[in-house]
Length: 218
Image (spheres, rainbow, N blue to C red):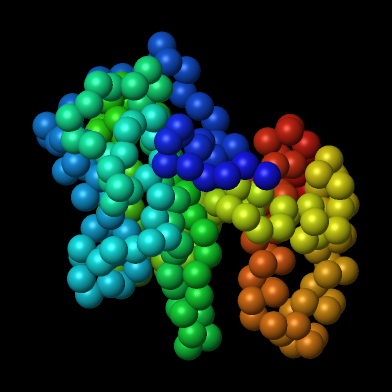
């Protein structure tokens, strides 16, 4: 099980890398590493309905190949690493059934040739997803379904352990395992909201893996 580290870069293993020769120079504003990091942290706080945009959220890990200060933020003045990719891990807070829940998320970017540009892109992605929610297009949980941090990278059980299948299971096997587990994990069947949420997340991650292997969808 891989540990998420601030440095070196802990890239989510369900996200493809951009080949170095395809990385581009961005036309963003001239943001520094420090400014872009602060922007990311503030966008996460706004997303999570924190009244203070400068709230210190201990769940946030900005992972890159930069050097970091003791407070977990990267030094502002330092050479660009050979790999400028960034991955931002955090807990997404959302309301369901009148209660707040949390789920681990990760947003990553390595499209641009500088770390600060990739950080800025992550911040703008969060801002865009918040906009979708404000305009009523989706809720926060739905908007971030595609950014779930897979459990084997965040300290929890893997999707195949949760479903009780092999990691090489087919889509048919995955869906059948989910159907059987749902008979006991659904809140209406004696389960709990948390267990049902975990099972649903396992299904989403399993199907993402299965489809990435080129398996024909049902």
